[in-house]
Image 1: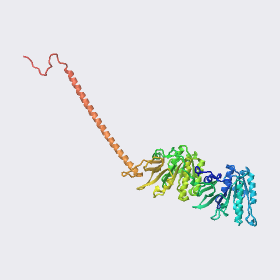
Image 2 (image 1 turned 30 degrees about the vertical axis):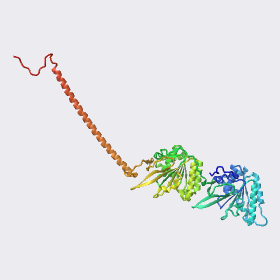
Image 3 (image 1 turned 90 degrees about the vertical axis):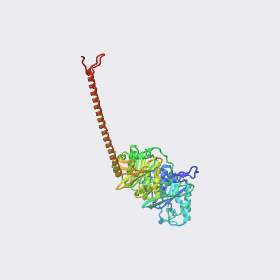
Image 4 (image 1 turned 45 degrees about the vertical axis):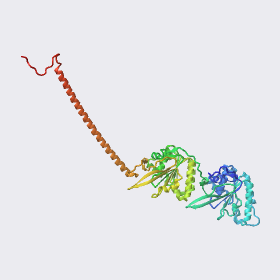
Length: 563
């Protein structure tokens, strides 16, 4: 939201419109007790803006309103605004709203003599006094003067009318058709309007785009430039893209990517809560699969996720994710996953942005997936697409939502350059790309950027399996090149073969050593047995000889007889 600068002196009193975004760029609303001119071509939303100003005032600010119509009758107006969710009859019965229709047949108007608006004053005064109105709309005022040529008289009467309304203390909106380069047919903005709002409805890229610009606002600052606005089932919504700030809270909580190996590459904890993550890659690189892991991890934590799908239907996404072992149907059935699926070209950038605002307000997710953002490029100029992405990121950060964006990059081009403008807005940038070696294309992943997170600088092989994503450790060849696919498998097989051969040789050496040890043990045992036998024989021989007589030496083995 745009906010007045601190210390700025209070200006004129404002009357809140209640219209989303309009009060932001007008710093509080329209000038209270004064006249505002809303002008533009057919179909740009003048009557709706004026009508919603009255209805919001009656319902939200307790300020009854009078709508004086010069083209449509009460029944037509009632039916028109009923489609936007407003009940004119209920407000009329509560004496908060009055519709007064003044029908003027141009063929019956004859310009003769003096001309004045006294009759209109009488009708307006009666309607205002009947309900104590604080707001008045005149739609379309110039119908009163369509057949008149005296511009000086016309402007004098209009000036008198608005001075009279100002004296009644009511805040007034007058609508007017734009004529050529002039804001209104009779130049009313130069004489009576304190605030002038210009609406346009133009075709850009075969899509209708409505925009609002504040041409002037006496006594007040206001947003500059053009602001896109939308008309949908809830009324008018203004999207002040230039009203974005940088006051987001920075959480220190970490959110898992759902892939443990990727978490390990990001300081072991993955993303900060409320951060914006961009995954770039060529078609089929696995961007949506990474997003599905991110959603599945959130489901396990009990967190809600809003998935904006711009290429595939929800059924197709859920079917495809089953092939890698991720069950998104359960998350959807449990109310933790909601899809918003439509083609990017179905509507303009503003409508997509409004859909995001509504989805966040209604579902209140903790996680968001935008898959992919590439389709936005066909909906506007690069600066408009970037402004829309800034608004999306601002929306998600304001609500503390961790956002996961995917982007399709063109093959054959420097991929880092493709998304450089977008990636500058992101907190984390992951790049998926194909590596062609020989007759193979294999996926690789690396982290190009991760604010506030110590991240790996390695390029890892990225594999989709039936049980999910695998991010494998880096494998390099003799000259330092990354090896993936069959080259990696061949190297791993060779390493396994070498390891097996080494193991076999070691086992053989072990067996030989064991045999030698056994032989040595057997030889030692034989020697010990032989020694034991010899010792036993010696002992037996000594036992047979007996002890020698006392004082007499034993026989020497030779005897001699005496004669």
